[in-house]
Image 1 (cartoon, one colour):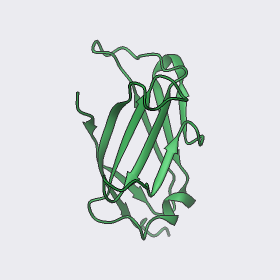
Image 2 (image 1 turned 180 degrees about the vertical axis):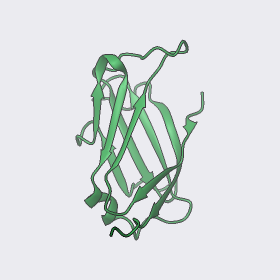
Image 3 (image 1 turned 135 degrees about the vertical axis):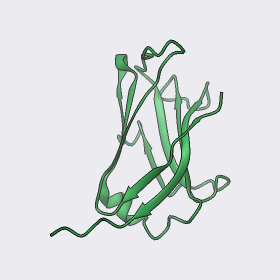
Image 4 (image 1 turned 90 degrees about the vertical axis):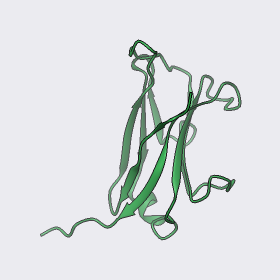
Amino acid sequence: MPAALWSVIFEEESDFDLEVTYQAADCTAKPITGYGASFQLRNDPNDPLSLITASVANGRVVLAGTSGIFSINIPAASVDAIRELIAEGARYNFVIWPTAATPSVDPKRLLEGDVSYRKAYATV
């Protein structure tokens, strides 16, 4: 099954936060205790290096085991550090797998989509 498409915007001086719920066909949450996950942003899908990675391993993806929720957080400082590097056509993917230590075993792409960056509105 292909990944769901969902475009995201990284905004100047703002954390990027996204919650993704892994569900069964009957829309009930699947338990994800012990899972691994990775959110990667690239300008070119064939580029082996990502501009930014959020993962369980680096603490930027947190699991809510029995509720099936993956919470992705990329701090504002990290978002702003790559703002000049994000090209038109940049894309991300979000991949999960059932054992935190082995991403090559039964990986599933849950989400993918376009990424853009925008300046924040001036505050008064």
